[in-house]
Image (cartoon, rainbow, N blue to C red; front, side, top):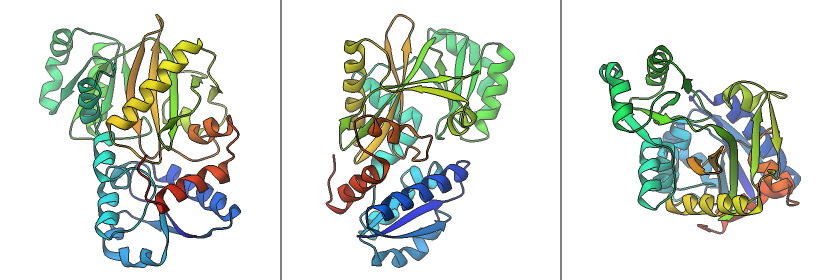
Length: 309
């Protein structure tokens, strides 16, 4: 096939997008595809979409911003081009943590207690709102629409809570305050609707933020995770349910906290997870014998064949 790889963009995750795009292009080339990389700002797709008509499939390697929140996907849909990953509706819902939380709750997927803050003016009454929502400190403060843990704070004091809220507002017009769940960080990748083995993420220090995600040696990964079989099965089942509830397709990654008393909490669904040498979807796929070139080849063919699982 002739495949266009879209990477770059204007989001805070542009560097990771470049790494993903180059890795994807290399993997596809190894499978015999004719690949061309387009290092474009997302807005350019609207004006230059005709350039992509010569390709059988567009492989989206953006992360965050307009490349992941549905805007690029909508432009490609209007142009009737085949592309990898979820469609514009699912992308928009998954990218907005508030909307995805509502979907989780509507279908019975367990998720940490949370409140929404829509204005900096509300920051002063944060603690009161949290008490009403039946949780207190520590708490996780995050932008409502952002990826790769950008702008996230784990606040253990009132000052950290307010500072974290101000930081989160730099990345989003709305922010989410979420109950912090002590326990383990685990994730389940989905490929074609099927959940892959659970991975446990163990940061060397702190929490699994942007630095720990994309810096070698900052985190350890256990794949498959060393957890009881029943819990692993439950995680994979809930991940598949979340993926389906948001209407995702082709591939995604679902992140969880596994509490100290073994309760499962779904945090979010990433519709365009990283595809670098440190990324978790390739790691999970490799654990069942799918090497990286075959992984991106499978995803490309799902798009080409118009599959929606």
